[in-house]
Length: 118
Image (cartoon, rainbow, N blue to C red; front, side):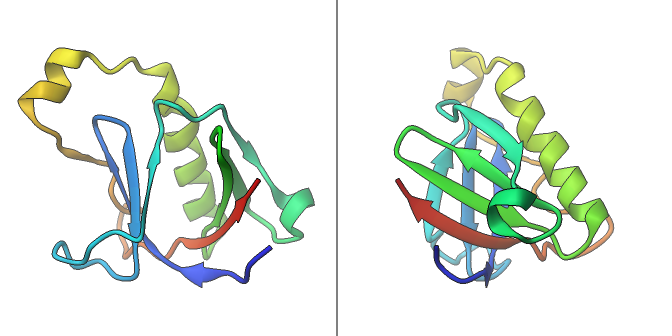
């Protein structure tokens, strides 16, 4: 495991979840998670020993995220769990992509990240 680091997350309509060190649009993302390939999104409190943490399991890695408060974590969990259930049409992807649920409503994104390669 690595230590927790503060990151800014953006989820796009085409299923791309990016994270970077700050909220500035010109900042190049540190990594991209393709939510269309994610196998599972689950709570991860028992794995990380941190309350309100979430595991995003992709074929090649598990990414752990947690919010700074229970409401933020619950909000992100609901968004990430629901995403794979909403099918993305290829027509929509070709038209461009738009941010979806880019930050926690009513505040700055303060989600914290911990990634672990399998």
